Length: 266
Image 1 (tube, rainbow, N blue to C red):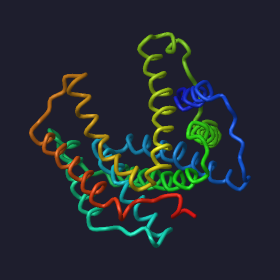
Image 2: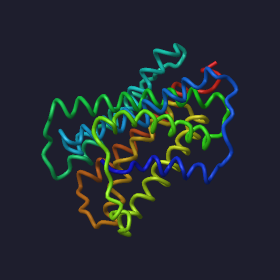
Image 3: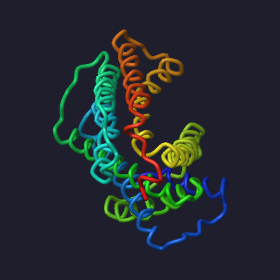
């Protein structure tokens, strides 16, 4: 095992916003615990386990399906949250585009066990997004709510650590490249990204925010080309166009159908 960057993210959020979160209603604590369990614990466990059985390309495509599951869950919970044709069209376009990006230059290989676990991770993230939408209606500071969610996530990870074993070589933390990556993961990827995701969910809604996950493979492709000098193929460029097009169709044309606000939660 190794140190989990969410622990550093938890500490970073305390530094950024040292004020404690005072819960108005103790029943709200259940939702914070549920968010920590689904988004911080089970999702990351399932995603990392799936990567040991199937390819990263498969996981990328499958996890990118989470906006679809988020929309379905919202539709079941809030009957007035209608799903228009634009959402489904945008979803299909984006998944085709993401597949083109992920499998460009390589052969697609299915692994039932790994792919099924990745699908479970996508569902867990969708549940987390819905719960986050509920938490957003409470009106708390996103930095504080994210920190509290991290706390529960770390708490739920303790039994996993006890079962799988935990060890860390402190000498690794003396290496500049290791500590730089660890700090980036903890402060940027976990603390800031999760906090801004919570802020966006509070103002846009669970479904509208989740569709921006379509851009993750696009950003990865661009970052790889600019920073790592990775090859960009015609197929991957076509995938970028399709993915962004799918996002625009889902987000702009379907905004009236997908918007989830605090009024809907009430």
